[in-house]
Image (cartoon, rainbow, N blue to C red; front, side, top):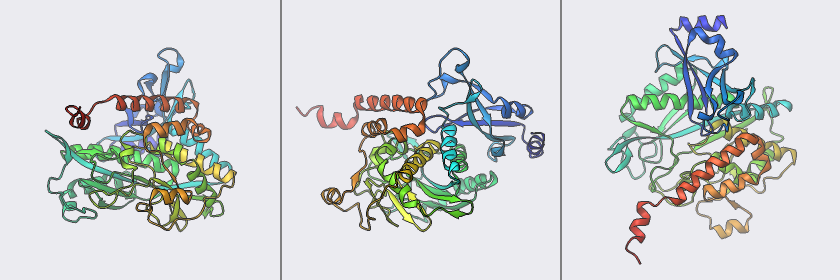
Length: 430
């Protein structure tokens, strides 16, 4: 501890940002003076448990206190917050690991892999929008970003070079290996890729990315958004996972097909975790968009280098294309592991690989070929989660109950809302 404290002090650090994630995948935490590093690593920074989304903790008694106990390996200075180092916290309640902490949920899943001598490496690819508020609502921050097909646009990309280079520099200074940055398929949409890592570290990296992007976008007068689909006629933002299993330094190829089969078998329940908002299901529909496609899979299938399938198989790994930008990376990874291991344990067969473009294949043909459809609403996905003991079990009793409660409330609030489309269509129609 003394060595870590001295190293951070030598780097100009005077405060720790003790950070954890709530059930929604939003970063939470507090600042703690560096002098109290021992407390952060020992007991943890304290929080009122009921004030955190998804804990379900009481307002009285020893279980009302939530402690984020710092993971020393994650302590790194934040370039955009001079003098501050982030340290990721694991949730503890009443002196024990808290079942409802998303990071603890992923720790349990990773431990199940370790029991078999395996590790999982993931490369998570965040897509996001840079937006601004207008009198009419929300719009891309760059007014000149108007191409009919803006993918990989090198006219608008330089206009956001200040933000993008600041983001790259901040992530690299905080230990991430940034691989590439590009303009994506929608106006105001971008993607940053960083190198794959062990599953828990990869989820931590994504949270670090979000912290940096929010702060730097605000400094540049913009709003960083991981809303899945802010514009109806344009593609939404995915959070694709590149996944590989390892034993020592060797890939575990022998069970890969069974693992993929488990992911496909549990796809409806996984949908609730990987596409966890009402807005998510505006993205998970097949159809034309401004740029010609949505790139969001709605068909439960796998295929070699097939970006229209739920699982895109590649040499030595697969890409899970279901998650969107609003997914909690800890919960999505933990649920993925549970589903895949169920496939391995039951030696499930993923079925025939699909080489066709599923975005144009008629639904009748897909049904005839045994290709299922993902849930088309949050309510449908939540029903699938409630009925799936494997995925629900990955979350644990506490978090599964809270997730279902909060998300059902979100769906009810949405279903009861009356918006402009309804008023325009019905107010004077009858």
